[in-house]
Length: 397
Image 1 (cartoon, rainbow, N blue to C red):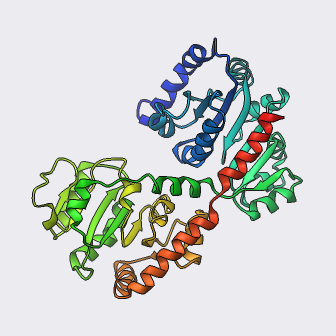
Image 2 (image 1 turned 135 degrees about the horizontal axis):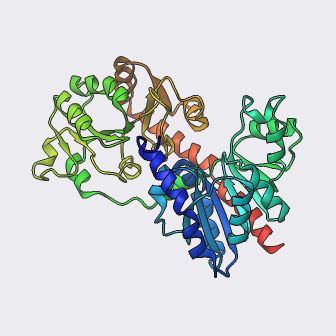
Image 3 (image 1 turned 90 degrees about the vertical axis):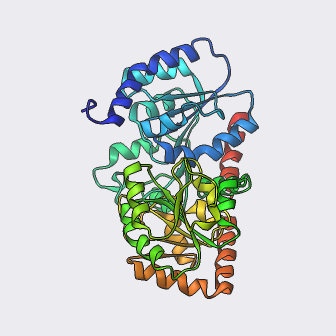
């Protein structure tokens, strides 16, 4: 399979090389080790505020981050905010014992969804403090099924489970798991911190020339099928910033050809006469979270496909938010944005035009949405501090 699947090939290669990196790093390592395990990039971003706060609080400790997925490891393997990044060796009796004997963690923090039997039981046997952070539990998960006894035992290995909401706490208590604390979602802390570090992008400033604009963030073909007709209709007197979820030249060129307004790529284009263009296609990575700053409207992609992308990094700046009406229900923050009146789901081009045009003509209502967004982010911050309070006490016990 790995011959034909790039991610599987990367994972296999990573597993073959993992021990070499760990042995080299930990053979003579004498510091206290805090081990953070995150499955993939999304979980890493969820845990990142805690990692950064921990590093600030305990600068002399060695921080290890492990990944299971190549999509996380390949992006963050050179992350400078920690001491070492590695794949996690496959869960097994021998591998987990070898890993724990080598790394000798004084603390282990698993983020959101990771439950590896031999690692968890090995940590518990060694009496190493073990925490689960930013977790969400749902009734259909195996822990709550009649046959889920094995998995319920894994939950009992944790010293403390930090969950995002009260519903998760209630579910866990219903199966006899009482060492649970509702801390909230660390991503609120993350997006707020990011929003305070955003700088300007000269290219975008020159393109916008002070005009109102919409950001189409992490969009796919299914999103653009609905949005391109609205762009071409020109009923909204705004500029458009398109940020694809993945950069595929042929697909971006197809979008660009389908758009009848003057459009330009952000990378590889002349910067002359930028202000006379109405659409920019961002064909470079790492720009999205800062581009939302100052936007009047934001469309978040993914809901017509595998699942909605990050809504919070847009919401922190207060634009009017829209996203597809299909795969969003498992994203708690997206449902909350809908409940608060900050966002709306969209089925068709006409839906989007009606929603945005109505608000374009009502700037007072747009200002109210911005204020709601700011209050929503502020209300949900604080998970990192709550978790760090416990971590600090553990280090001083």
